[in-house]
Length: 306
Image 1 (cartoon, rainbow, N blue to C red):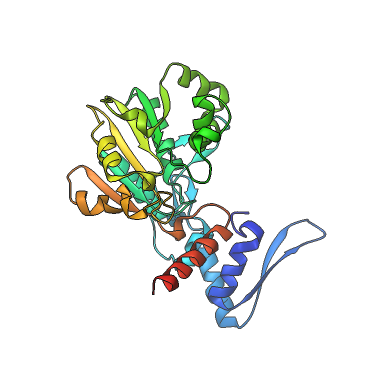
Image 2: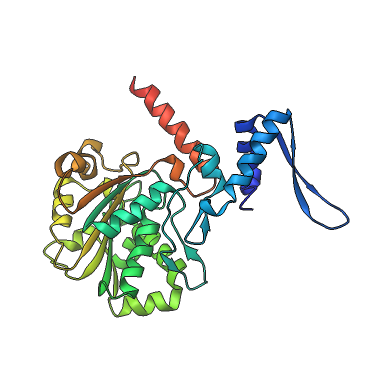
């Protein structure tokens, strides 16, 4: 799977890059699987050399190989330093950065008090931030984790949703719950939430607070106003770290120009202790078709703006 990719996606990239025909053959006698390349000798030699290089130790860091799909799409030929595991989940899955941009994102969190991560869906903005927050909690670098999101009514009005306030807000916060369930398991997550070691709240509930010794994550920041963004960033207390994540192409505010995330870089760029990290479609780690969808929408928006 690591070599061929989902639905043989990597083979398609290999064929496109080296102009060869690649397919898989299973030996009936042994059951072994072979990768067969057809084409001119020169092109096959280049593809074979590439495949040999990509499995060399220089492409391995933190016990994790550089994904072949990423290497093929970016003409990867040199060693890339990628940090080792961030955490290991309760299901014994190791969470690591999958691309150099994701690795830069993690290094930025390590080295700065505030990090703003901007990029499309599926690039790991929130997932990696939650993983690093749990790492800090485990290592006693912080005493708690606070996750928050702005509640923006996109399509459904809160008043018309069934249930009490918690039940109305739950759908907005569910992506944060999902990430924690995956990493901690339901029982441990519930225990940490009961003791308020992990707190998941709407952004409006942050007003008036000063949060010390915590790892604070603001998700879906593109749906904050400038006033809300200022309010959030100034909640930071001693010993805390903040990560802001958002996608400026998915603003749900009625007036998209009011997004606090859009203007933040212009206002705060160069502030000591604060770093901006931009992720792109090359960092999407969901199904490979997600990259194509993102690219298609970007092309459409570019044509529409002309």
